[in-house]
Length: 187
Image (cartoon, rainbow, N blue to C red):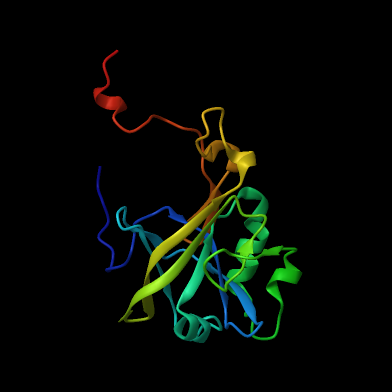
């Protein structure tokens, strides 16, 4: 098998495609699509998003230092794409995508009701890296929709049908293939 050598880039795919909600704290909210996001640490619970400074939401993030990561599903694929390619500067993306705002518990940014999981975050560090600024945040609270729980009370990804992003394309995640430690589990 031969491999091609490509120019430097990021090939850690697939990525989660999430909807991030922000607020300026004065009644103006926005939602943007982010693929540069993830977990940093378990304890303390830390997550990050990376945002281009020219995005309409960027000043809101810089001012309030709060956001909500809203996981997406197959049912939210249109909204996920729309909120990534249309600016909220002159358009109400919540209205245009039929997204329902819900009050968060810890931050001013709204939750998206249609999202199976909402992760409330407060920024603790900001780093500028080339085209993007990385916002490292403490996870303050997680809201998980009960309709996606299995019989043991665990969140069931197969029920939620989450989206991921790969080289300009959206995909739904498939079936469970194993669990942590299955490769050494006694039979």
